[in-house]
Length: 125
Length: 368
Image (tube, rainbow over all chains, first blue to last red; front, top):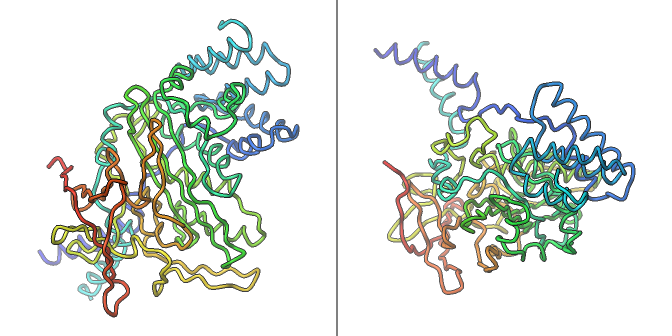
């Protein structure tokens, strides 16, 4: 019995130390974010800088395309932020499409999106 | 020989287990925030952070990195830049003004289930004074828009004294110190790491596969490393809550712990090596081993009511408590919500200094 217990402890010790911390759970990301954290921060701080705006726009575009290519849901807010940038760039009808995409992808946003769209376009469709 | 392998394995195992989060207080996500589970929001509106520090950039840094960790927990997070534009158009550019908007009004505008209030309490780079030292303190409070109740809270306090560890705030800070050599600190990285650490213990939302299935999962909340019967967490003795000094104190240099010493310019030496290396909400002792926080109390404003809070305690209905041995130990407060303590210095061993708090009540939260 003692030998068995010893064996068990040895096996357990080797197993547990080789598999890493018991509490550590590997997380599979839900969404694709790319460099969003950085371009979004830059944009938030220097949205008067055209280069910064351009970079953030491109990053959002990339996130949308990569998500679609990987058959994944686009992360919350990405469509809406992209839409706002398009609107500011004068691409108003394309912008509207993305505002509505946000609303359709995330019904939680409908109230806010309706308000934004109504303000910008005068209707909600 | 067999015996030797056996003993070696035992040693290996003990050593490994003790390095593995060092026996956290056993609480579940439900224990940590029961109110959350009775309201369970699906969407979160993050308001601009109120910044009480002198670092002008800090609030923005936090705000722009908060979407990702919250969305990854399975929530709909309202697009920050669009929300900002909205407030600007409404002539509300200041975080303090936005903070005063009633919950009802915000709910009507955004249709959000919950609102996250963020206060930056500390954000200092001290590298000019004592080598490289960065103190960051952030308080989070989530309020349900229907009941207008606070349903979750989180505090992160850390400094460059925190030890490096996998995925911890400490590791990040070490990276920051390296960056600080060139006085070029990557605050976006710091912010996102603090945010990630904070929301790691946040219940999962509807877009996550474990939505509503995580109430029993363990939360990594560490207690002070008390020298009491349990050996590790705050404990009750003679009708008082006893907390190890390292848990609360700052400004004291403990042997082997934080000992800030001026370093020659350009050279960086890490001095802080607390035993635990994980990022925790609150109660993680490494967050308290710092020297730059001015005051332990801060104001939390919920529903327009200003409440005094203490950094190292959790709050339920605005009453301060600590987790201890399967219970919530509430400490007695005065009319101003402050509480008194007695500090008992141990003779000889610095490690054994303790704080004593008067107890208001002890509440069991374990189901069994």
